[in-house]
Image 1: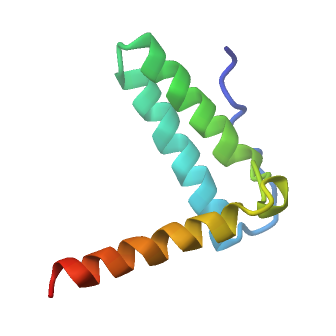
Image 2: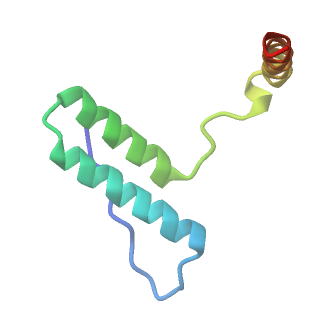
Length: 86
């Protein structure tokens, strides 16, 4: 497993989002170095690669009907909570 590349230095100022992403990647990679669990190291390296790529992993178009399903579950949960507290 390769480690994500460190941020490239340029003369352009960083946006707040880019800076936050670089901080998150650095934090994940530092945590990866501190752990001794191989599976945790893999998970942290993958998380850092996902954050660094800044590409959408999935969109709602990839899962048609999913947003409506979650909204229905939330509505049912909200109704059940209201009835339980009466």
